[in-house]
Length: 549
Ligand code: GLC
Ligand code: CA
Image (cartoon, rainbow, N blue to C red):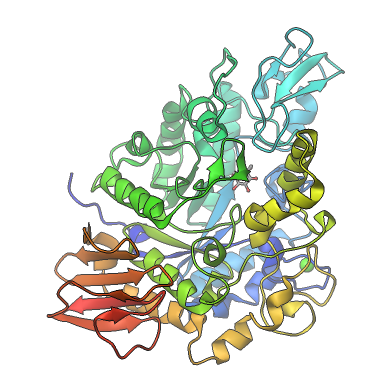
């Protein structure tokens, strides 16, 4: 298949977690007017597409990923007029907006579910999955992704309902055409407002095996891939959304891809499929997760990371597309997880930036990465907010893990690592809010903040800005073939991107000095992350971008 050119392959996504980006009215919660006040910051950085995590009405059991009204803005975030102004402000600056579409499940406070639970013959009953219990327990042995059984008993009708996430996130039954019509209506409502696309939450999970068989797989990541995702009708449903709504608009769709492997990725993102434009595959995000998931850590290496990027580049080839990212609102800070946030924070944050912005795929940057924000280490469980942390804590307690030990696991892998507020300056609450924030600020905000970073000669923000501007000059970064140099030191990741131009990226992702044993003749050094007089020796975490002249 020949290369398909699209605007969303050439641009860069920036993800905003609205609760933690900027508060405008001092209630401690980030909001739409806060984002509006930072649009010039985003434009100056040079990103193109803003992905907004959910801002719809929600009881906030899972911070907005439990939606009670898809047509309304949560009052904490503002009003529909604020939203319209935000969208217009982005478009006026030549930027785009994609929204989070969370339709694998709704909130249990959505009117569909409130009706559904009323009686077995309620017209909304089969908007969700209700099943009788088995042997005095739930219908099967599935576990929720956030801990505990995936079934909740409802005494009112003496049946259980399915929730792959929290019990306040009942799974929608896509078998029901009325549910699919409801989703199409939501799509159309927002697309008609002029948004530029959707990020589709846990989209591979929308089709279930209606026999709901027990599973005997004990590795949780495999359960997700083999039981919860890639269900029998997922492609029929995605294709239906595309055919009946999405194709009428010039928009981009990116699916969150839990359980999507290289073996099946083109079924979702093949250019001829009429399903999704790209996915956020999570394979490298699940690295280091043991059989019980993220709070059951196992070691992983950079070789594992490189193997995954290699495999995915080959799998999508010219026939599909992916996004490239190293963190988001569900995983630890990339500089803490893949870099070195202590002795080489600046260097490694920049190296990772260069990697994300030069691999093949649409880059996605999570808020705060552009100043090298790090994981947070709260001592007390009470300082955490994430429902996943609390649910898994309960489960681990039952297994005999002490709270003290559990908190240490949260330090490395909890989702709140990336959800502490954006650090704008060194004033009270880091310039995020004039009031007490909904979650504590990372105490390192005095050193790490936008104002302090920008003031430095070796600013991370400045490096992102340069890279983003540089990337815009050459379509090679979007369409050029990716080729890796093989047989080098295991501390190096070296590759080229080639079309009419050629770029060479040299990354030393280690604390060692490394020598360059390949030809640099004919290459001009365009960008680097640190000062180094030695041409053929790389300093720890050194990153260079060359252009063939
Ligand atoms: C996705 C979201 C995550 C959320 C979950 C349930 O994984 O990224 O934040 O908790 O889906 O909606
Ligand atoms: Ca607010």
